[in-house]
Image (spheres, one colour):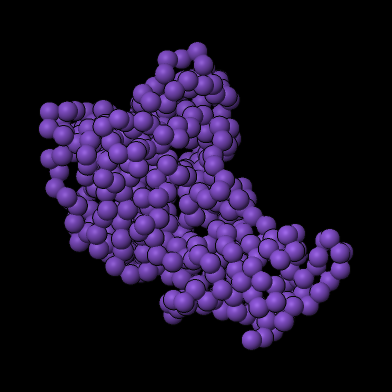
Length: 429
């Protein structure tokens, strides 16, 4: 948000609200705020589905000094947000976890103690800090524009009974993908401006990916630190604010391209405000977090361009901090895990897992989106959120189907499409 900081300060002086007054979400002037509030709490027809993500993992990040941003769980004990939320400039002190808290509630003003979680520490992307130098942009650098506005927060304990968001694996974003955004922003009408500066509710909306920059090449940085960007523009009902269209000038590092001028039904803009909030895309059979809100080009009015730090560009850096089975929900008691597509299982340090219905498997890796599993008679099989209970067999070099209703911890009933026959595989050791 670096080059827009003066505008943010101006808003701060005009408004008296809790925390960072630049937080905001802009909506179409012909839409109601109630629909975006319902969207943010998955109420009515916004319940979790292939059309709408479960937003219970999106919460408020708040400091003891009243600084506010949005953050999202990517593991039971790890959240992701924008670096500028916790350290905007070189002159800011390094953030102490003890000064911050994570509030996981639909309305942070109504949160009870069970929804407030302590933070132990932060890990800011090293390129964000490297670009904050004396004498350049007042110490704020250009980490937002080059796609390294990224920070991880570590909680003191696991959050239970909440599914963290998965990170992109095999599938990558495409221009034209529908994207869902969420955050705790001041309410702004796209045509008329500020609507309410006292919003405490999680709001959500949608847009279309208009730009993808996989790598922003900066010769003075190590290649492993190069960032990436996603961007959307805020189209008006009149279709005359298509600022990422081919007729308009290139913005920062976003490159050339084109954009559909027509807005979606629940089109929104998030810019500068809602900082650190997630950009989510449905891919590989599940909703994944593909970006975090970094900066924007105006006060969330029509024509605003929202720029996200692209998480797939930083997968290696992020993965080094993740625990095993990061996208699995921790169940009450803390030992059992659950994946929405795979079910309930008990993991062991050795790599073995005990599935509550299907019994023992050995996992080659311990991530939840896809995996090679070994079973005594089936051998190595590849399972994924996109295809399960269909799976790929290394032994037969073919796709097979697991009949979940007829399978248990002692035997698995499997259909082979090549032989067009059913077979029973023992799982007794």
